[in-house]
Amino acid sequence: MDFGKRKIIAELGMTHDGSLGQAKCMIKAAAECGVDAVKLQTHISEAETVRNAPKPPYFKGEGRYEFFKRTAFDMDQWKELKECAAENKVEFISSPFSIEAIDFLLELGIDCFKVPSGEITNIPYLVHLAEAKVPVIVSSGMSSLKELDECMEIFLKRSSNVALMQCTSEYPCGPEHVGLNIIDLFKERYPGVPLGFSDHTSGVWASIAAFERGARLIEKHFTLSKLMYGPDAKMSMEPGEMALLCSSVRSLETALLNPVDKEKTDRFNEMKVIFQKSIVAVKEIPKGTAITEDMIGYKKPGTGIPTKFYKEIIGKKTRRELRFDDIIGFDDIEGLEKG
Image 1 (tube, rainbow, N blue to C red):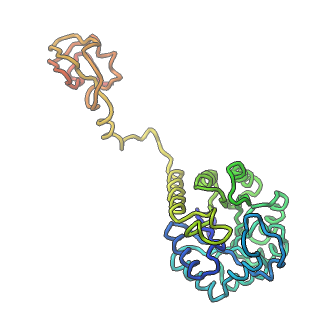
Image 2 (cartoon, rainbow, N blue to C red):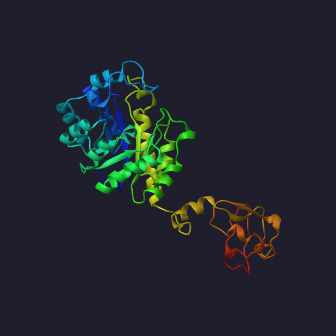
Image 3 (cartoon, rainbow, N blue to C red):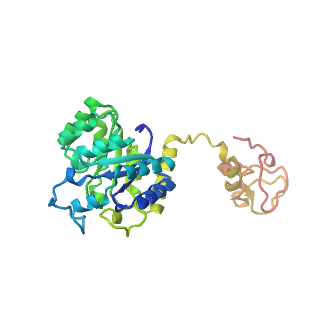
């Protein structure tokens, strides 16, 4: 994965609910929205969690061990998903939640890893992943700066192909906790490291603001419907929203890459003629008459004497008879020079 280019990542998470067909539909739909990459999660329950581990408040229904066990794909299914991503011309990313999951994805030939924020303090996991020499995106999520420093040191010592995302582990995340300022902090703290933003807010505003602030990677949860099963669906983007995000970010990128020069207005010349105004006669003015202020007005189009000459025209004589609504030209007035 090239971290030097803008990437919009659709986080599919586990919203597929273990359905291979549904996961493929999500990949295809995300690609049609215009994303650059899709991301899934790789859970191996017995390697990741004890059976009675506590659940986060947003996780309802079945236990997490059982959920991850039930919704896991085998290697053949993962190969189908990777192929589906390739067919739809999007990069394929996954978050491994154990060392065993890292090895599983290495065998698959994953394009890029994403480190979940809960693994930031899992030093053996980080070392194992860094030594794999595969592109890695680190999510800052719930981590302190000290924890991030330790994590980034591991990757930067072993591999330069690492990116860092500002993220707040709240689902959904309120505006007061987004932390756009952290992007600036990361620029100073980790110079040269490509930055991104994993967006858990509602809508597109935070992602657009983060991109303008310098985040090159934008990640947003994606679902076919907010009514789908699982902890992520309700705070995910449906296809229409994701398409809006993609088009908005691309339009912003185009705007940022094309600064406007206000001195270059030639392309508006035709518009100026239509919308700007000229000095016109508002009554009959005989030839040789000295112009007074009550004889003139200011009307479209801008083909005559520009209105900025309204003072200079006063007191000067006409070279021809002017009728009501005649546009007055420089040749119609004695002693008036074009300026």
